[in-house]
Amino acid sequence: MDRALLLCLYDVLYSHYGPQHWWPAKTPFEVMVGAILTQGVAWRNVETAIARLEESNLLDPRALYAAPEDALAEHIRSTLYYRTKARKLKAMATLLVEQWEGEIARFFARPTAVVRADLLGVWGIGPETADAMLLYAGGHPVFVVDLYTRRIFGRLGWITGRESYAELQHAVQSALVADAPLYNEYHALLDRLAKDTCRARRPLCSRCPVATGAIVTCPAGRLPSPP
DNA sequence: GCCCAGGTGGGTA
DNA sequence: TACCCACATGGG
Image 1 (tube, rainbow, N blue to C red):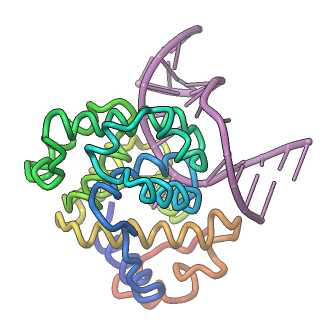
Image 2 (image 1 turned 90 degrees about the vertical axis):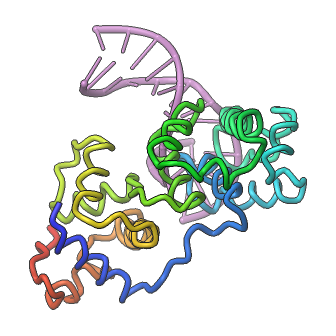
């Protein structure tokens, strides 16, 4: 992954869209809950579930840990696979309460690799969810690779699309400095771009700043034209 | 009515 | 390892 191209794309997106203010949550624990609930669904479906959990005072590790799984499931029906996700939330709360007394800050205040291994050990938390939690709840400098990231990089011709999660993450992280605020904003901007283009079934070359001419004049001046 | 949305775990070849 | 499938709502 080319450092100059990555930074160029970032600059173009940031100047076009501005800061995205991710993650939209009041507490780190709410980020962790949201990271599980958003698996495989659009964020708007998650918002109603988060609101219902908040109304019932369940956006707290101990409260979630103590709540019956079936009752929990009813609160999050809007997020698809709600029974599965209720089980995932309980698994996460079990780790945080039984091993960390519900103290999120202390849980994250360890080396990135150690926290990541703990998260990946929880049933229902895979690499993308673990990294979203590390970055947006714990402030750890890990680049989150999601479907949107793959689509954008793929359409720019930067990747083949067959790379593994770890390969893509390593490619980005080794090209950029380890910088949590940068990774935070970059991921959010890629998401925004993808929603404006890929998901709307719109070609990358219309309505997309990558092809509006901004790229052509970027300092690196080497971004390939979209197909 | 039909398709798909910010993933993960489990099963099979 | 590399697919394939279940999970099971809501909006376009």
